[in-house]
Length: 115
Image (tube, rainbow, N blue to C red):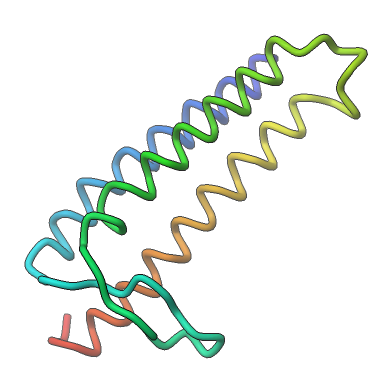
């Protein structure tokens, strides 16, 4: 894995880790949080806050570590394209997905009790 890919991986893991503390502080007082959103962004089902607060970030971090490990240990001739680009795309995709989920959850939380 190149230095740039490792740097992006580290930044994504740090951002996902810090999101746990932010989400705990912001959403910790809710007994239930949205677990699913409809196509218009409205919450369609509620569940345990643990999913949003820590399970998704941990799952995404483990996925990034797995992708990074695969890119680092799979021989170059068996990979399609540049592994650095693959790592950057994976980091941006998973971090962006989590940021979008937090944004939707924040929007839902504001509609419940204000800021």
